[in-house]
Length: 404
Image: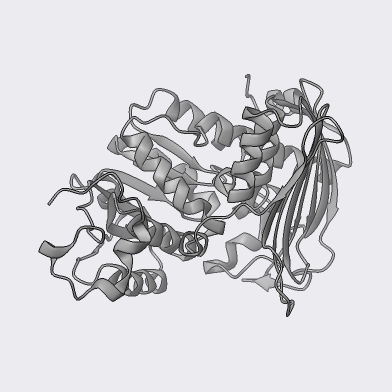
């Protein structure tokens, strides 16, 4: 039975109320056979999010997982048994086996940040399509090595900078960069206020040597957005920040946590665009905001999750253009089952575009070079906090032996 072009709602096909239908009677609720098989390297919280979204997207399935932590493997197997009850999930006992299984088309790497470089060195030997979680690496040298490894790679090599697909930012990209609704971009301001980092296996995200530092680990998403909207390379970074509230007394295996929990970061771009980033990780609620000012107007995008008893829009996009053109306020969003699948729905679209990339369909996914520059800004900001000085990006790269 063929499926018409009108069938585009995956929510209908996944609705359990239609489970009574025999396969021969499914049309609107038909689920096609997946074309691709992916392995997940690192099956913790983020790995399981990728598992859920792969199955929701439907064009691929999860073939197997590899993770040296037994608890993560156990949880991932439980989740997969709910997502696909009649499908076996291979549990590999080595990274090599997971990377080189001939039955697999792609690898999704979502292990702790500091492990990325070694895993990429093995994964690249497989020739398979790769989705590498952010940040691509924790040091400039490792990030640069990955860009060199991926430069002539014949398969897809996608970086997991998926905030650009969140509803508010996807609309902002369209308005500011395609529609030019606010004219030429001149200044960009981004705010993230949120609770502290969550617990991780071996608490790796509480130590800069494993995470790359807070401004690399968490904030590379926002630096990617700043780079994207600025449409230029960063040339100068100044930051101040500190460890004031979170984990000040935290120790793990006799080592004290050293990650900052608040910062202000200013970045100057080669085309004169000026940006700033405001981070607070001891906020009781989640709040994101981006304000872009151009020579033709002002754009504001925001997202919040709070505990208030009254309802208010979670997402909001404002475009203010004075007397010359219409202004408006909107609430961009995706269907609830997509937004709830992870990172406000962005992870879902990241997977849509990963499969599209595999099929040769043009997309706007973050390329390896873009992943590199998001790490550059984060590392420059961490360096600026340590030294108290403005960091010149060209000088920083040169001091690390990197010539761009």
